[in-house]
Amino acid sequence: SSGVYTEAQAARGKQFYADNCAQCHGGDADGGEDAPALAGTSFMKKWGALPVGAEHAFIDKNMPPGNAGALGADQESDIVAFLLSKNGFPAGATALPTDPAGLNAIAWK
Image (cartoon, rainbow, N blue to C red; front, side, top):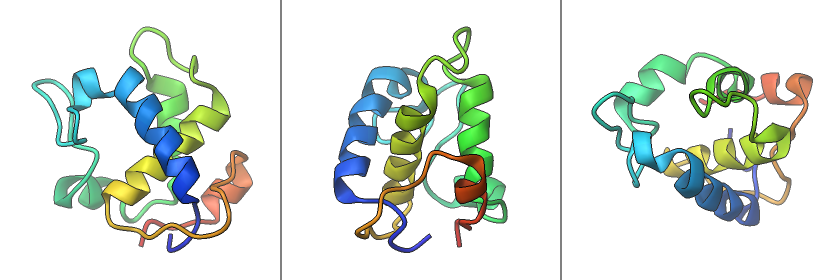
């Protein structure tokens, strides 16, 4: 998970997150009344043992509610890059991939 996204990708993801996720998951990814936090200990307990591709696939199949898959693979990868940054993983020189095989080869830890 170290260096698997770029700062530019996380910045795009931050904007997509603000436009599509923050209303439920909180502006700082700290969760809402009915939506879990996407950063911090509880998030890492749930997703940390899974590949990054699992979170990407979950977003694709479930988010945003009522319009699942509307974001597309590129925006979903940008959002995951933002979540990596929110969880303290450093940026690198290569963008997070959009393909399932590439995403599933990356661990959160």
